Image (cartoon, rainbow, N blue to C red; front, side):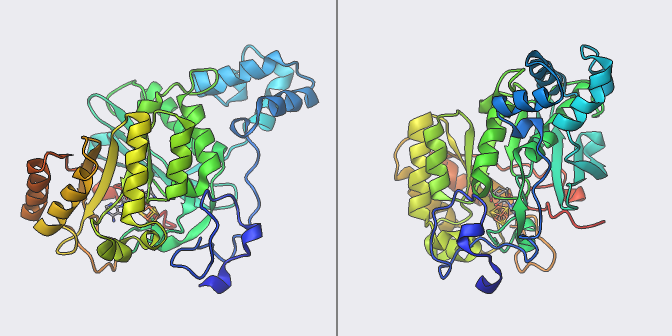
Amino acid sequence: MSETTIPTTEQPETGITPGGTSGAFRDVLSKDHARRGKPPVHFADMTEDERVETAKKLGLPKFRVKQLANHYYGHFDVNAAEFTDFPASKREEAAAAFFPELITEVTRQVADEGTTIKTLWKLFDGSLIESVLMRYPTRTTLCISSQVGCGMGCPFCATGQLGLTRNMSTGEILEQVRVAAKMMRDGEVAGGPGRLSNIVFMGMGEPMGNYRSVLSAVRQISAMPPEGFGISARNITVSTVGVVPGIRKFTAEGIPVRLAVSLHAPSDELRDELVPMNKRFNTTQVLDAAHDYWLASKRRVSIEYALMRGINDQAEHARLLAKRLNHYGDNWAHVNPIPLNPIEGSKWTASKPEDEARFLEILHAAGITATLRDTRGQDIDGACGQLAAKER
Ligand code: SAH
Ligand code: SF4
């Protein structure tokens, strides 16, 4: 497949240490990657200087930028008609220059009595991505996408089957959050008006493969208005397949987000098969980097583990996982086993309930905290790993 990848120099920022293309891992770009342009520049993509500059071109003084930030981050508002503090003659122009429509709803699927909503979005170039809103009694979580498709090729993952089309811009990532936050505020989700409280980067894509845009999005999600949406970094989870340089870079940022690492196997032998990226960064490197994140942040790392029947769900796997985590001593990790959501045509299927239970028991007996992750929205393919954004 290396014939179809474009030369390294033309590749977008991936956050991945450059390496040969002959190794086990490479960014898998679709053939039409190079033809695609960049999404329109949005307020969220601009630096403060760029915002002021753009305002100037419209004949607007600097303080108008602050007002726009208030509309966007404080009120989730991009509708010019609602910029009542703005001169009427400038509203349309300002909205067009700063808030181009980056994501357009294609379909919305609802489950769990209206508390789970999966939205299919079309981007400016026709790319399709998905996000899933899940309302619980005490929190509301939005699962967002950071790339169109994914190049990491995990064989059990629906997104992985698509390959990577392109990275999403900060604006495209952030718009998923703004729309969901607005829906919650306006009472459009069953249960009445509320607040979007949690964000997980567990939709389509590998966040560390789109490092710069994801980092900027994380900052703008967590900053207080008018710099951001004011969703605490502690309530943001960044999930990675184990791109070690990305984890290390993220550790150095010092933002108290929760890190989730998709391990899925306790040995290199098995993980090499389930997670191709393991041939580039093996379980020892990934666990070392994850444990260093714990040391630096004092935030417990989530270890994601999709239970696949007869593959990685046996007692020996649980025992080895416990041993490898306990190797680091302190209570630094939280294991999140999730029954596999089998994708069409996959040779793997979900574990038997009794194997799931035994897996958890063994971890608990070894002193490791572990909770079975819920599989909300499974009936609308809304659960993790099912986001493939098929054309409907
Ligand atoms: N690329 C990142 C984040 C997106 S995937 C990552 O891999 O961590 C989000 C989570 O869903 C990951 O833990 C991923 O391994 C898991 N996942 C993927 N396919 C799945 C499936 N079919 N069933 C259950 N979990 C799956
Ligand atoms: Fe990509 Fe994550 Fe799916 Fe692997 S599990 S293919 S890294 S989205």
